[in-house]
View 1 (spheres, rainbow, N blue to C red):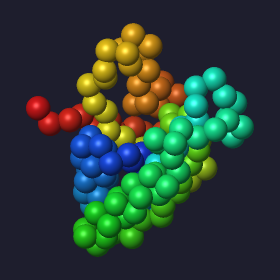
View 2 (view 1 turned 45 degrees about the horizontal axis):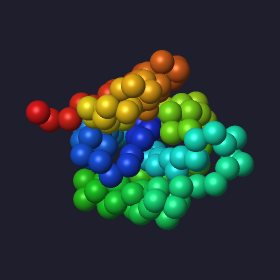
View 3 (view 1 turned 180 degrees about the horizontal axis):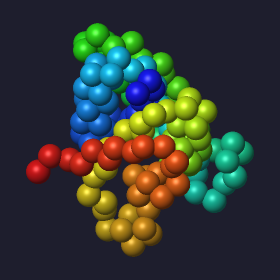
View 4 (view 1 turned 120 degrees about the vertical axis):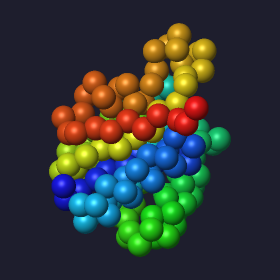
Length: 140
């Protein structure tokens, strides 16, 4: 295993996914690539529409810095890759671009609206990624 890609967003499940990725990186002496994806407003084309001011690029850049600091505490230097667009699509694209041997993402219990709309980044990644995938669940 040479490269691990982590989807990160500062949630508890993402922090657990990052910690698990760190464990694997140490065990396999693997490179860690961390991404945080700024989504576009619904109904806009990729790369064309406005970014939600409550979920903006600066916030995702901060999330990447938090991830880098957590990995640095473990002695791991990460490559940080900000992205814009559909979170699942961006994670899948980056996994291919970086030839990731493993993709690590967190999952959480979806809210009612997410369940009704059947929206889940981890589910969407699982259905489209062509790389090994580790989905880290929240602690109960």
